[in-house]
Image (tube, rainbow, N blue to C red; front, side):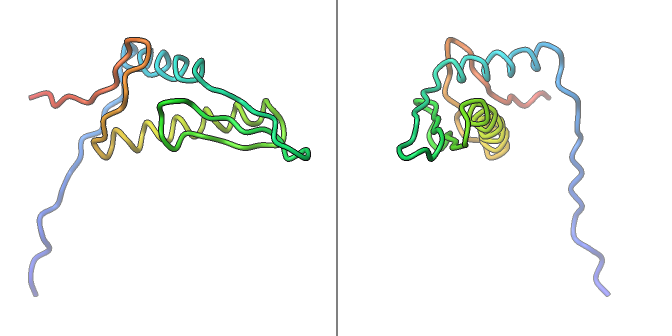
Length: 101
């Protein structure tokens, strides 16, 4: 029987208050750039954030659309950072992950 392959251990840490504040500021800056439309024939609302590809939402009410758009944005940021994608700067706020030795 062969021993199992190498085990990868990831060390998780909590975000600092400064990092959390930066993320909140980025999300708020992005949401200020959101545009909403009333869809034809009572189909609800559509919202998107210009410059952030794939960040859009559709819901029955404007408030539900705003909430959905925030959730989509948060997931988009998390996935982008995990995958090493470049997250565009907004209002001078840049989200990057730097390796610390």
